[in-house]
Length: 496
Ligand code: UN1
Image (cartoon, rainbow, N blue to C red):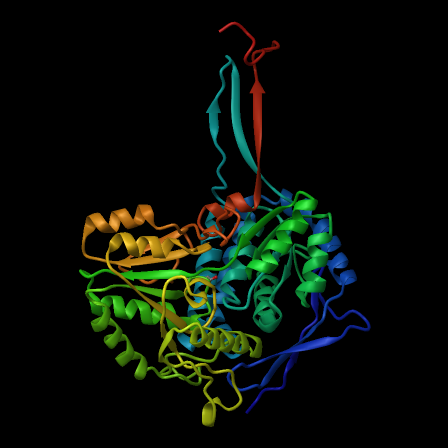
């Protein structure tokens, strides 16, 4: 039985509020069309109120010792662990990834919050020698102030937490805007921090469109940094607008991630890798394997193995543990993916499997696209543009050099993978693949929270999140010189 849709307000200054006269929007289950929850369509004045609350809370949060902030984070991790199953199911119901992945999304959030809680007892600066006598030099980390976290729908609890937990431990206060179609997950994340005792105004939550809420956040001069994960076009726009106010803009954008399978690869292992990489989360990961680059010697054999497995792939209700792949996240997603499939056909790719919307029976009310495999030529749009769906381009190459050339010849560089048993080649690939992440004998997905995450080229603007890099994202480094010589010493000028 469908539960009564919940109604959420905004979370501003420690209170759930529904400002007068607001309009609402709802999120729906992409597998069934069921309405899940409704939210306030935030307006610029709501953003102003949220930023004011964050600004007001900042001095006290900044002054709270980082280990104390860490204790609150640890409580948040405990609350989320307690609620893992419940929130994992909300993830699956709201964005359609299969339930094992819904739980994984939440686990990634828990892992990261715990990792950042520990950072409260580090937050390390450096001590560096002075060129002068009786002078001591060091760096300390200070929070940036009010920061905006703008997050996507594909990891609706993990990615918000990558940003929120890191920003909090560093002493920043936050306005968090989730993707509209996973606002329910976003609200649950906020409830976790509320239950953990984050003080009022430290974490604020404003739902609504990017055009209104996102833009108002970017425009507010009090917001000193913006951490954005999403599409390239929006990311570029946020970057340009942020630049006008010299804001720090952190971007995590698209990918066109290759899995290379060499002729000496362990083929069954590479097969498991590509299935998980290409069709996990219905291909809707920035790290999804969207290109399979096969050595010509194993091309026919591997493609046959792949097709046999895909033919047995179960697409359906993502809540059913026997299902391999759920729906795509929304009508917009479905439309875009089907458009790319049409492009693939038109430009002469050979459709090997899938290529259709699934209809009838369990698919009737949802957005289901069959797992799709195209044989493509490198250079075609399908082989170079991000699709963000269960569509895999297969490309034949004659040797390692060509594989790397093809792998690198795209506008993105997030993740990459090579399957080979040649250790020298594996190390070469580690060096030569143009990407922020390279996996050897493992798929392009599966990042762990204690390592930096991010990419090169159009995937971002040079920053990394997760790992200790997350601390760089959310702090200013202050350099301190302490002169205890009791005289004026002149660097570069005093006799050496
Ligand atoms: C993303 O798709 O934006 O490595 C994040 C992975 C996940 C995170 C993906 N742990 O695929």
